[in-house]
Length: 169
Image (cartoon, rainbow, N blue to C red; front, side, top):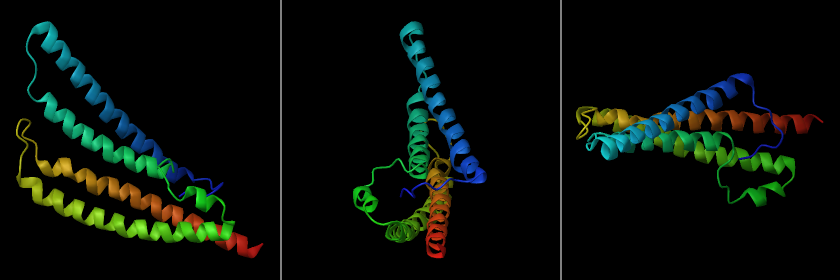
């Protein structure tokens, strides 16, 4: 949820923007580089690597989840209720933000819990071509859930502070 003119502090910006952006850049660069090398190998040298398709798929899964957490952190996700929330007074807007963040927090906790369980259960299964443990692939559910939870907690605290500041005026 958009929280008006709130300014995010330095620590929050580093954790939820800089680190996530670096991870996204590494993932996207890896996908591009290995696919470009594979295209070169296939069309110029006449043979290609068999593992590129699987690696690209797993990198794309990671890229999707991590990018999703960045989009939520930056409040750039599609919000159906944004038009409704923007017409509310500041106090009511902050109450809606708190309620929505609490509900989303419950969902995120479920995502974190089952993402962790799934990654642990799949540590004994290996991918077909690369041979990596599938638990590493599915651990992105847990990791992106943690990033989302950090954002929801921070955003909820900011909304509570905004309510307290508006009451004292």
